[in-house]
Length: 483
View 1: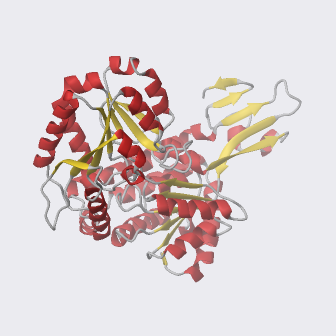
View 2: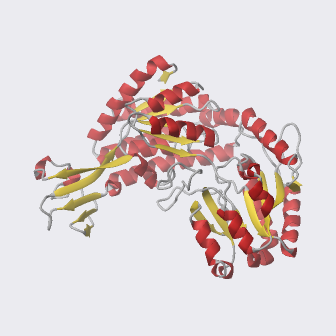
């Protein structure tokens, strides 16, 4: 099951090529059945999985049970979509043109998936990237994350057991252990690897992206690299909702000890008497909040170092913080002026943990100018009334060009696994804003179109034959044809 050194990588990738060929020969219904089988084997994992993950990540059992359920849901939902054929995007043009041309999507080839530290189930061994790649008909090579190796191996065994139960070869899924960056980089550079999925830091994502782009045959590296996830609280909303908003914001900021890629790390306010009252409510909420352990010592060390830097930054003033000791980190919120925020790039860097920065603006115009300087984000949230939005249309247009998911009230930390979810934003939050890593559309990352011109009907893939015997949705001569 495990590969651990560079000399074994050629064998690992060669096996993945064979696994990809196997998946491409499966009908989409059989591929869906394989995915259902994997889901059932993950579901059957018992207390050992949860206790091991808890020991390795410090995450509470309730969170891990919920994440396990989400992981199982992903596999079954993506299997449903795979079986439906909707992502094949079948197209037929044989009417007015000179030629009979038909097109659909096929899997790219072997995909390297890097595990994420903050989601040991849903974004790791058997997470959404692995499920969406297999749903697209691509084999997977999974690179273990050093933060939860034993958890990853339990999940990997469930996948291998499912492959055996289904009758599929082990080559569909490859696993490599260890923390070596060189191994990961070598995998991305391998000529038979066709795509990469990564969730983690900007530095790590960009290093892999550059390797993928600079190969003799460039490949897509779909990296999700974090985000500040600004919340923009507009004046009329603040007047009416100060206390409730403070509760919502601090609850979201400290959820999971702030270790989510959608953590709302920035809060934009127009500075006035109401914003001062809101800050007082935020201070009170912070004083009352409980903060848990961080995922591992490395993340805690990085968080503490970032807080030390902010504490030493003269432009940043502490609004409030939770109690702290050597065991638990402190949740903390700072305030800075819009001018200082723009001038000091350090204030615009993500702090992975329960830390927020309030950016105080003198006016809506200054708020718009300040937000225009931001890089791309996974999410941006408007805490606003309808009147707020209608009165600030130019601000809305600026914000639309900055994010993948735009929220009207609520908080961004809940990411639902549904078709309409967009979990991928403008660079530098991700490397390709056209795609999502959550929801069935995540499979689109690993698909490519191929056209067949003037082929005999019985030699075409069954989904493109005239009879449409597998009953998929198609566009035929510019008309949408439903099964």
